[in-house]
Image (tube, helix red, strand yellow):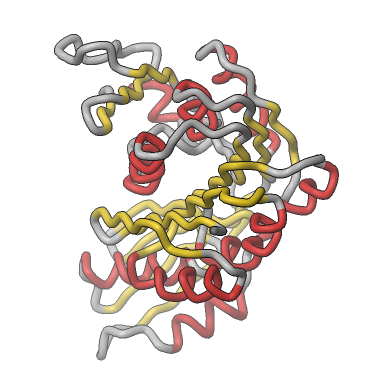
Length: 282
């Protein structure tokens, strides 16, 4: 997968302004960011980069007296999780029931019979360290086991794997990144569960037969808004849709879109400015 590296420069620069800039850039397809002295560096898949939208968003930058400029270059091919793979991460505990860890760190010994998920995040996103992943995991813990699960934009496969460990009968997953699809298959083997992982965007669901009792998508706001009709078309009666990957301020947009599609809001989670919404289709 080819990426652009975009260096955003703020004058004057502050942590608050850099955080808001990253939030705006995420709406134009950016996936990850790195701080730099005078601003922030963002990375976006070349096929998803919406430069006109980025320019439009930056025109309304909310910090008075702060100017924003940026340069775009093609990012070198590299392992986006190189540091994680080298150092690993400390176990992540969700609701004292679920422990997510890598192969270097074992589950907490003071928990009684936790659900354990081991993640090897080679060239894929999703280890449980981000608020959005943890919130979806929390929603899964509070949802009855699903007959059939659809994981949209699966990354490492963590969400589908958690669903399977919680008793789901079947999991189908897809991602536009070939590395993520391979990583999902790899992590499913590690965790001794079955996940059918496919390469493609939401249009690949045209080839998937049947409907699902649970659909999950931890993706950026714009993709969620565009793909939500497809998600709804794959939901059986009484199914649930869990979405995350966006900021609290974006929740009204997602809720309005869901309502137009006949969905009903069941629960809302918030964590450090990020949000997760759970809907059902009655």
